[in-house]
Length: 101
Image (cartoon, rainbow, N blue to C red; front, side, top):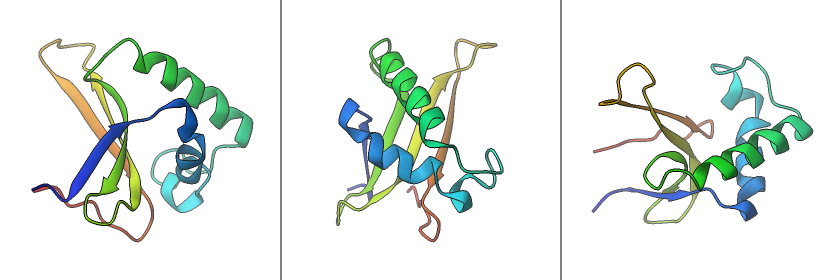
């Protein structure tokens, strides 16, 4: 059994998304700064619209399977240069490590 549970972001998940992108520690290695509320709303709405285009690709919420604690987000996108590949990356909330087995 996996220790992680993935689910696509839905319209009602903005607060989870914003808890990541507004956190300076989380964003330090990505954009070097937290994302302001209005920019976060725009990006989230765009992400939700893109979700409808692809069933298996997009942005996912990541939870601890045992506790249902929100750990962060993951993203799986097409590699534009090679349609046989996908690119995966993640953001996690600070002190928690994502361990995939």
